Image 1 (cartoon, helix red, strand yellow):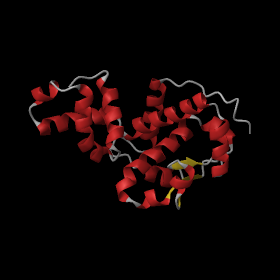
Image 2: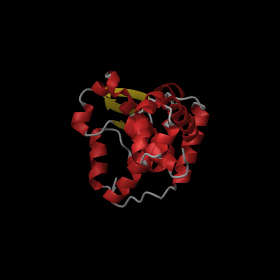
Image 3: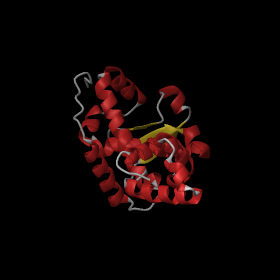
Length: 206
């Protein structure tokens, strides 16, 4: 396939939020953390296949095939509990391709790493950037529902006490501070939580 002429249609933030919400409602519900592995394995019947040194050789954490039957992941990351939050996000990212770009991704006919390398090399960088950014946003909204995040943020602030002191802090600094404890609730990295909190802060006040 010639990847050079691929155009990735624009998806608004609102549409990505809605797709993530619909997917979560259908396959999981409102409970956090979202068990993305169970959804993939049991409800979508997609095989997660750990490959030794996959990250080292490919430069990516995970790769879903275009027939939607398998997701290749790094074996060491898969077995290392310390890296599990990162793996969960990578899996959600791949499901983002499945949900947001099912038709166009199927046309890529990706079965092997070689197919992915060809896509990465030939696809215009700007289009590839859109493709990956949209999947990242989907993963964030899927694993960190904003309503649940608002509730847990308020609980954490209450536990910390002295709300007046927090109001004096720069928003991003405060979000970085809260991201570490909240990451344990949602089982994602503190970086993912910080992004979600910054997104929330655009329209919310403590």
